[in-house]
Amino acid sequence: MDGTLILGGTGFLGPHAAALALARSRAVATFARPLGPPVWAVGRRPEDAPRYGTPRDGVQWVTRDLEPEGAVTALLEELRPKRVLSCAALARVAACEAEPERALRLNAGVPAEAARWCGQRGARLVHVSTDLVFGAGLPGSRAGFREEDPPAPVSVYGDTKARGEAAVLEACPAALVARLPLLIGDSGGRGLGASDSLLVAVERDETPSLFVDEWRSPLEVTQAARALVELLGRSDTGLLHLAGPERVNRFELGCIVLEEYGVGPEEARACLREARQAEVETGGPRPPDTTLDAGRARRRLKSLLEGPRASLRRALGGSVAPEA
Ligand SMILES: NC(=O)c1ccc[n+]([C@@H]2O[C@H](COP(=O)([O-])OP(=O)(O)OC[C@H]3O[C@@H](n4cnc5c(N)ncnc54)[C@H](OP(=O)(O)O)[C@@H]3O)[C@@H](O)[C@H]2O)c1
Image 1 (spheres, rainbow, N blue to C red):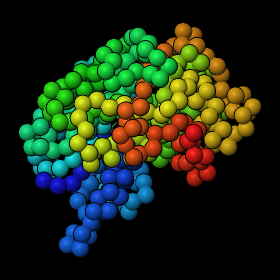
Image 2 (image 1 turned 120 degrees about the vertical axis):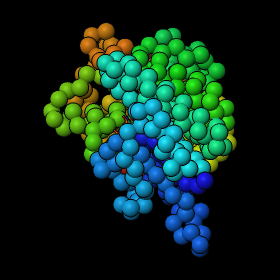
Image 3 (image 1 turned 180 degrees about the vertical axis):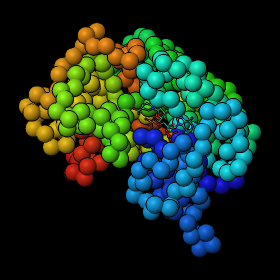
Image 4 (image 1 turned 30 degrees about the vertical axis):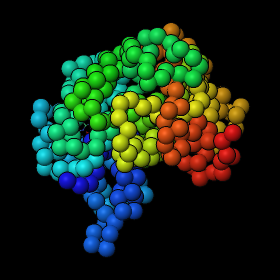
């Protein structure tokens, strides 16, 4: 048993995690094994996934549909990885409302199957979940929801992800479930995630409506991926929140994104429309505040978990002032 398997390696988050896992693998290469342990990234369409900072053939891309019962177990038996990052999901709120059975299979059934295998074989499992397991109530403080708070989702997506968390920890008590917030950052030109989708809309001369009454603790995607890869090398168990330290509303976040991409503050505001959740028809229920308190992760991990402005500036190659 060796190597790292990224389930959902072809989505927004997965290719970043695959690139960082490969870098870590190369760092432990030996004379006898110059490339280090393998890294596999799985999805249905690996040909569409961006290759970040790695030679094109560094990560081993695997084409597989994980939805059929037994598919993930068969894959795990075939590759026998030592570490598994589980981030395959039906991750769009509207898609989950439209196809709840499929959402249940992908967001709970597949991770549970992976967890059973990892539990039996002693493989390290980090499963990725979401802040949207919360939302029916408000966080107890401005710092946000803590790991101890009980899940209370409002959408099929949040509900199936919460079921996935519980199923993973039951089948593999040594696993870690990492809850992520809204992710921003580079999606390799695919318009995925909260910042690239906004940039695409603004480039098309649209004026996106962004909510002033929807609060999140966004995290830049490479910082999320780095923290997840760090967790693959650790033995923490249970739940852990990975999130930025700032609670911002979606309109504020939109302004920050445009400004960090070089638009002046006044122009950035003019590119966007301030909206309220109740005014806009969306593809599913949207919780007002799912801010995550990531204090525990910040105390434990070496990986940076910065706010949206500092992390985008860092990702875009600008200079970043040290955190206060
Ligand atoms: N993006 C966010 O803001 C955010 C926030 C919080 C939590 N999360 C969580 O983070 C994880 C990754 O999210 P993401 O934004 O990267 O999602 P994404 O872009 O939608 O990617 C989903 C991944 O799952 C794979 N997948 C879906 N159905 C599959 C199937 N039947 N067989 C095999 N693979 C399948 C996709 O691969 P193919 O399409 O190639 O099949 C893709 O690699 C998810 O667990 C999500 O719940 C995301």
